[in-house]
Length: 339
Image (cartoon, rainbow, N blue to C red; front, top):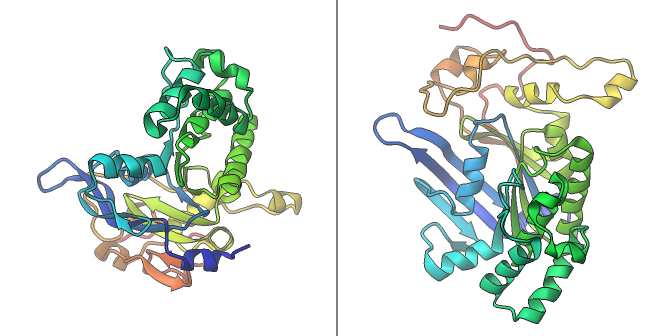
């Protein structure tokens, strides 16, 4: 089995280079995605985590070409797809599929499950009727449902079953990349585990690459080999999952992780220091000088207010956008008065 470093060294399957998605014109556009670069190798799962409103979903939609980009490039399997249209774009979207957060809204209530899968198999793959019926049963069974369910309608299923159907529909075109946008956030905890295990199994079975978007770091840790932390439309920390969890270097990552229950600490009678961030996530149209995180950062200093930090490499595969990465103490200092 390839190691993390070996996988990343291979040519990435899906890449973004300085990708930007701005909404509105004038002097203060809403910068939903502001200069994001990423690379996902074949068979690799990369997590994208951050609070609501940070630009995660917009980034996922832009990578699928469902949202127009303002600048930068999207490269798939070595080919620039930024301006692709017509047949090239349709082919790209068959190879890259998206799983949406709301399985109920993603399914047509007037179509049976079998009809929904049949439509994809007919339009995207051009299979004859008999082959489509066979593949429909195979797809349902691949996601843990019975082939006999093909005649049922979405309202006859639970939320977890509907998400399985959405996953089956995505698999119908035999994609190479899945972009999963909060795929379990609308489900009960017990059902979440089932869907996560299903996605892990499907990734191994079909050698899928996956961008897994979530706000729950415990879920991302379970699913992903690498993690990117997003704030205010930008990546502020990136690295191997265990490295980021064991030694987070950006104050925002530290704050997010401090809210994740630590079972080992609880069993040992230790308490994890919770870092409470003051204020709300800034709106993406809000103008902030210096580091975008400085208004909420417990460690902020004068330089943070005046100068925006670059996303720089700290070690192999580890990037952090913080002037003082590696210099922060174990505990958050009292908030400083910064002018």
